[in-house]
Length: 380
Image 1 (cartoon, rainbow, N blue to C red):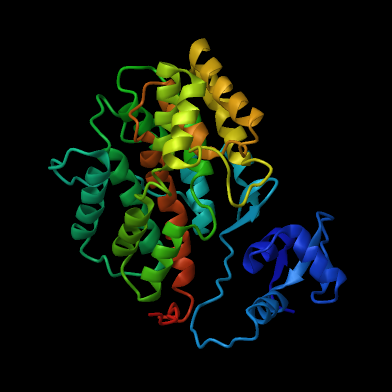
Image 2: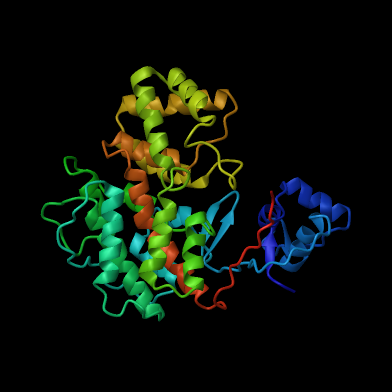
């Protein structure tokens, strides 16, 4: 028997609803297997792929598209991401980002998270400074082409620390401080904010299975790009407003709601964008578990007025059947509510996802190279 998929994973691979998967079972098109945990049914990967091929009308298309089997992260529709068997929402409340990275990397120890001395950064925008720091990290590593696991994790720690350092200056920083503490000091230089909530954000965003930026990293790994170039591919993809930049749109929604009122802000955004940033998720139809885990820690940091504003925005959205809030809204509430810059969500996202990208990079190195090759269907 091939790898077993949960019902939600099977539905996503087939591009159908969960109810449709069970309809296939009742019609004899699929065989289900009992889940030993009692949480539903399991399906054989080969059966799912076979049904997917048949559902395309029997058309056989020559392709080298890979089916990716991963042991890094599983997405549970009800409980959220599961990192190597551990719930991310549980890890977020008592485990450091560094320890979670070691879990994802299957490393025996957390290692050195010091940032290399890269000199003064010549750029102004946060994302450009982070790009520069990543390139400089690679340029300053004399053995950047070393693809052994220990070398890859060392590179990832250097990059995460360098991206954090590139966010901005920090006075009297303890070089032994955690990544969350260093990042908090740079994002809230004029306020005393405990790093607990920011550490939770880093943990919750460390990986999310085969997200678009993670696929970019795996494609780079498949051609045996070095770790720095692969991480650069992930950072470039994450920079898009529909991926890592989504929380900034939610931040702007909250800022406009505070200025003009929730009703006007939501209406204007719906007219201009057709959807509400920070709401809805393709995987978590019943609500993003990461939102609850992060907002629970962020909410006490907000003033009473700003807590009320977030509540009003969510209540108005719910009253009009808008999908439930996702982690982007929690990130936006944390950053907006504590006076952090508007692009804070993307900044946290980038530092956090280095952990997941490195894990997927190492996993992809165990696969045959050059396995990603889509076949185009020419159309005039």
